[in-house]
View (tube, one colour):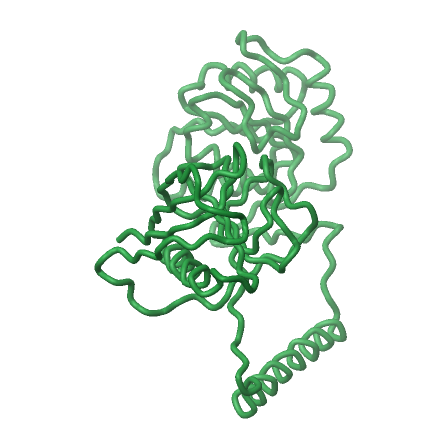
Amino acid sequence: MTDVFISYSHRDFKYAHRLADELKSHHIDVWIDDRIDYGDQWPRTIQENLAACQTFIVIMSTNAFNSMWVQNEVSYAQATHKTIFPLLLDGEVWLSMAAMQHVDVRAGQMPPSRFFEKVQKSLNQSAPRMPPRKADETPAVQPHATERVPDTRQRRTGLFLAGSLLVFAVVAGILYSVLGPEDGATPLAPTQVTFEPTESPLEPDTPGGSSTEPPITEESPTEPSITEPSLTDEGPTENILSAEGKLTLLRIHDVGTGYGPLDVEVVIKLDSEPNKAFGFQLRNNVSGNTNGEMLELLRDAFNRGGRVSIDYSSTGKNNGIIVRVINLP
């Protein structure tokens, strides 16, 4: 059978046949698709010669890139581990050929003499040629040398571990459903952390756990919910400012953890004020009950993605103490 299979777009017919003639002048046997017979046997003829060749030359061009025939021939050559020589006639190098050394022939010239020497060398080093395959046969793709097929013991070990984990999960679920949580205990919801900028003018002084209480499941009231002003230990409400937006952060942490200059346990951020942080205390003080209600309103807005309006007392350029929360519909 043939030494070299040339894959090309029919629109690059002239260059492909010039290349075939040049290969033949170097005593290299060539098969090129002349597209003469478009009958039912033509795809079989292409596959037989592609399977039997030792070396595969593809002429890369814009026309060839858009050709289904050429792309299928390239895929077949790669799957059967043919020696591939790409030529760039026009356009850009294809992604499928990017890892291979190509020859630039964009001026329409023939490849240099060393190209034909490399083709001849690859033919001399190749294994004996394969007989042509039947049309209904598909070449078996051998696994790469780096692939490892797990033995039976490895598969059994994996199945045993997976089964053990499944049994453990089922038993734990049964025990939890029977015993339940301790009296008076409330299961905690997963921590909710969203969209906190990596670079913020207010970073916590010390790392603190960010967790929230269980989300409220009741329907939001049709009228805006308002929690009347309640100051923390920060002092009287002077220079009260307002802000409105959607919550991008709701953080609750232990007493004393702090968030930058804010000595608070609840911290929020709004999409309308991305560089500012607002908060209030939850520790035992005269405003404890009201502050807890403000937390409930903020948590409800956070869970449903709603907007809120807050009044706050400014404690710095980028932060303030919240004194009122309005949960907008």
